[in-house]
Image (tube, rainbow, N blue to C red; front, side):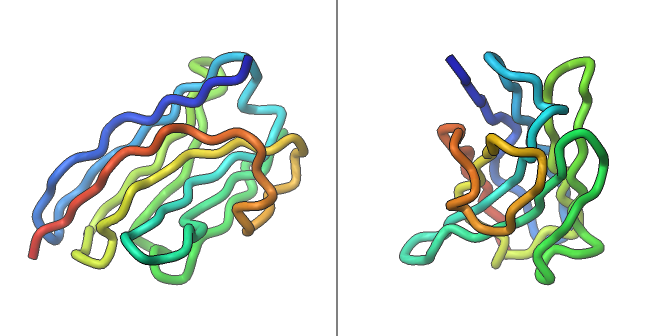
Amino acid sequence: QVQLVESGGGLVQAGGSLRLSCAASGRTVSSYAMGWFRQAPGMERERVAVIRGSGRSTSYADSVKGRFTISRDDAKNTMYLQMNSLRPEDTAVYYCASATVYLASPQASGYKYWGQGTQVTVSS
């Protein structure tokens, strides 16, 4: 059984930083594409960053480029999202996701397994 468990969310002031973690069990994170998505109230779930399986190729939403970094620790079977220079518009529930293929899709529909989400709130 695949489980993804996010942690690291919280309340931070604008300009601050947070690091989200996604611990996986039941599958090897390095073998499949994984990603971070977020959903604000009343909005569609959107891609934040994705990382290809069996490699380190990454892609980011334009709104987070240069501020967020997705990474993976294969030894810990854990994925991370380092978020710097946070803005109030980054406020959302952040989800980690794992695909069944190694190519990273920018669409949420390309991911089969999802965590429960972690709230990130950025105050102005």
